[in-house]
Image (cartoon, rainbow, N blue to C red; front, side):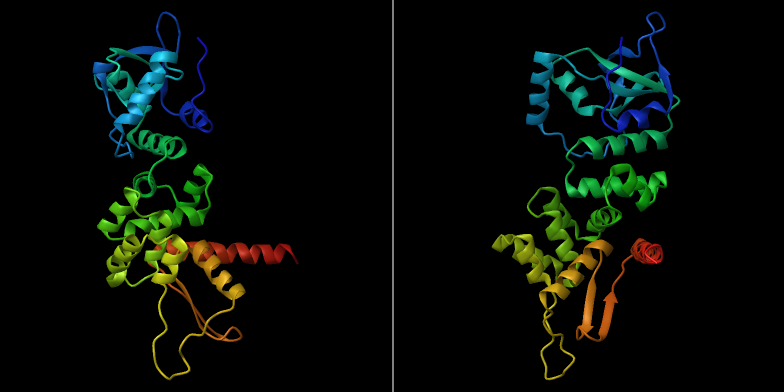
Length: 293
């Protein structure tokens, strides 16, 4: 039997890990595994599986069959899901007793965690907080750097860092992002504010149904009243665009003080990763400048 592809980018990841289990008589890589012997993935980053979504998938499988086997690893006397938990749940919903699966033996917890997290990040529409938690788990448990993670996922380093920074928000704000009441863009805007004011500003965004652009204006620090000449002046659009771009690239707070001819550029950092990001950007800029002669 010809094995079906596991999905763009995933076959290479799965194919080189663990030892493939095949049917001893037919040599087929796709096995029929009893559902009662299968346990969920303990490293599954997805926290919620909508019943409507599972029912829709179950109906599709009932009409067209399972187009792609799930991926399991041997675990004790049974199996654990590496990839395909939605398909597994759909089979359960249909009352099936067996499910087609590819099985791997001698697959470590670390490899399984990495495979499961990356499979979900590539295939499943995780909410921003689930995505940030998956990033954090890959970095802390698997020892993957921000740069390696960005390469594996085809994202920019700054996108990875900005997503991770959402975890610094208050739990209630993270819950609003998780449920879609606030977007990741709202979360990034709130990160630029004084932590003591974030909940108040988040409630204002919700109450007034502000979009991200208006939320950024609301969360921006207001100039301190006074008669001093140190009060920040409005920047021209080009300079403001430059500051916004710098904030996006670094994933942190950037403040310009003084005039556009002379002053101080403040770059705030909240972790060692923020400093590493700044260092990498400066190093790349230096390399580009040298290459240009």
